[in-house]
Length: 133
Ligand SMILES: [Ca+2]
Image (cartoon, rainbow, N blue to C red; front, top):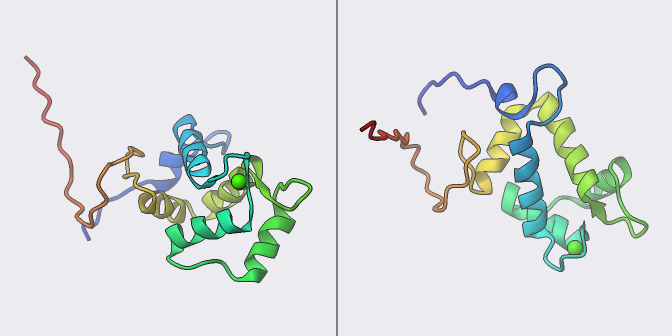
């Protein structure tokens, strides 16, 4: 892979406040909605596991599920809320922004946080030679 210097942190977070940039919040919302199959606004265990498989290639261990539901915002049935999902990603991103970008890539986003329709393993840089008249 080419040695690009990518500042993962600043792609995702506001350097002053450590908050997610608005585009990142949009992506988190998109991913959350995509896996919230029954559209009830929370992730049950099945939905969490679908997400885990899509992201990591395998489901989470039960202990990880427990950790998630104990650490992050859940509803009364221990289902992960969007807020909880957001918290989970925020913590990961503060410590490992690269990991978050890798996750986003698994869900079809590129380094510019754009949704690319086809998932290829090519890292062909897109150079938009936009005509300047
Ligand atoms: Ca759901």
